[in-house]
Image 1 (cartoon, rainbow, N blue to C red):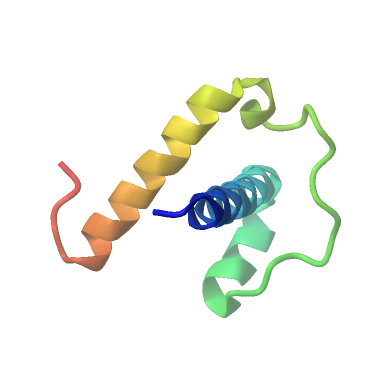
Image 2: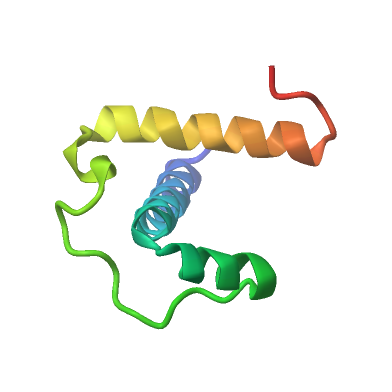
Length: 86
């Protein structure tokens, strides 16, 4: 694999990780009503991202966050393939 390809892969992974983290942080701070609307319509609440320090994810180091992200990816892949999560 070329150096440019590896660099692009790392950048794409970083973007996916940051998107996942942003979404998880938003989900952690949503009210029950906002969650109901999200489930029913797929629409995110019209509000800014949570303030840093307002979710449990903000207290976790980057290495652990990356492990959580990869675990979420594995679970999503399993569900998408129709496999049990255990």
